[in-house]
Length: 442
Image (cartoon, rainbow, N blue to C red; front, side, top):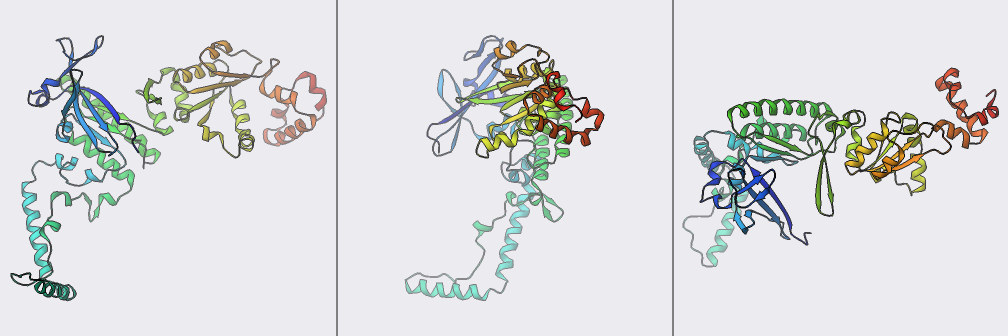
């Protein structure tokens, strides 16, 4: 339930000429300047822009208006005029664009529908004739009974009551035509296939620099199809924008959301983290310094809290403690808290990764050895709001474990590891000198 109006305002540039006419939105044009920002009375140094507001109230019906500071009441902008801005959205519901409806992308992709409408009118007439010639005795008896009842009530019948198709109910319009794969409607295909077909149609139907909004691009697609879509999208967008740059025409943009590690891993640029804090949206670009992390731990970017572990030993220890955590927290796993473990790949890489994640407003903790100081040091991480967890007494993780566990538990660990690692690797484990004599001969 919407108790307070939801208001979203977006400022758009590269406005088509027909929307700049006085009878359209010429009086609502504003200016955008990199230094001055958004101004109501633009000069020659400003780019011509429009600010569009969508407001949703308790009835859930969106209201679209073009506004400016001097005219906050705004002027309504229709769907047709919004479509001229070249903004299309690919969400979960794509069936509309797989048929020739009035506002569908397939209709916009079709040059002339006049002959189609004539053919559909003839199809409607033939459908009525076919029903009229069909033996519908049960329906005819009911119609006759209705006629008799009407006459008793004083209704004068011109001829006789018969069952027939209502022209208003069965008039076949272009919206009844949908895309088919042979005899099977494309809307009956899998969600991923439907979304890919709809996306291809949208790309082709919208010209003059489309802004394509894709909600959860991975939805319904297998990882290999997601990778192919991203590769094709990047290649096509680069080619089209290069051509439009040479022609001086508007360039296209693609804005997508994702919760998929596959998408994060595949994207080489343009990756941003979006957060909503107290009703305000914050968008931060992912630093190129995190490119390695993006490839080895892409799932971290779709979490909320990140535990950067110095190396694989610390990652393994934390994974082993997950069950203990659940037991101490009424069966709730750390994943419910949005926690993701990340391999920092050493005391000189891990701290830097932790700092980069903190700068993106993730909740971050760093867990590492204390035998060698982290670089950057502990104080630098704490300055960035990172919780730092280091072992006491200048020890590595395995030394700390062997120092704190009783001899019986250490022997159990060594007996378990020897068949797994082999005697040579097992013997290379770093035991504290103060306790080495406890395990002689193990």
